[in-house]
Image (cartoon, rainbow, N blue to C red; front, side, top):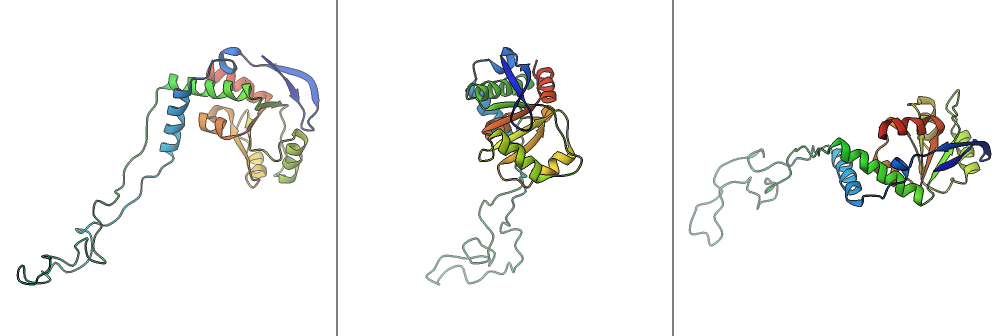
Length: 208
């Protein structure tokens, strides 16, 4: 499969890139994609939630009233969960939400996501470009030229580019990622992937 390479003005450069069928032309495996996305979202959780139970509340442990003869339920401590200011029953505790996934499964998930994206004509290839200094307006102009100003887009670059990151980070519905760190969730979360020529080569090497 071949795609034309566009310049930053949205015009054709006369060049094209070959997207191998074993990466961009497979039958998408929806279950593998689901597993990969679930793992990514789970790994984003810090797991630092915590509430105090009755043993951790500061307060007196003196018995509030005699055991029998009051006509009400027995009560042993002001820290009991049934009283205001008492501890919480079975409250959340810190835990690790990290999930593991086999490397081959993660690779298949990315291939499936890329194949699904190209079937929906959601991939654009542009020539490599960069800025000397952070220029948000310049990147907005590029999105306008490509007709992507009103769509959620993800720019995939060959390597990490700090200047491009600073240029893009304040633009709503626009994001950037280095090709070697591209994951299934990011592919699916964007309406359109903007692949640089260099990024295509990195994806081929990573997923082949």
